[in-house]
Image (cartoon, rainbow, N blue to C red; front, side, top):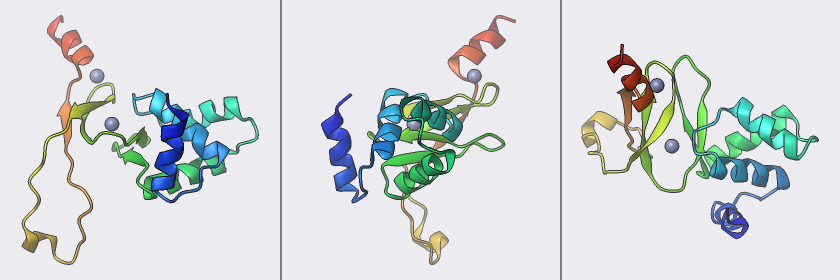
Length: 141
Ligand SMILES: [Zn+2]
Ligand SMILES: [Zn+2]
């Protein structure tokens, strides 16, 4: 994992790179399985026991707003996070709730008229179904 790349991404997004934000980013870049805020806090706290839960959650929110981190909303479960990097879509498993990355391809934008006065930031897909593991479990039954 490249420390310089992390610092540069903070600079590019005009967000100050505090040690705690750095720790959040480093953890997210190493753990691509879309951890929850609670998991991120636990990991950051292990490195720096002074960081509070509130600070970690605030940092996460700031980083999402700055576009450094992506929040993947999963209904009925805690939100998951990933360090943006390459654009990608997501596959969410109905059974185990796993969030997996899917290769990016461009998605058609909605017709202008249907947006009204809304300002569109991004168009991405969420695929739903059974992940490889759960699909295999079902097939073997
Ligand atoms: Zn699954
Ligand atoms: Zn992802």
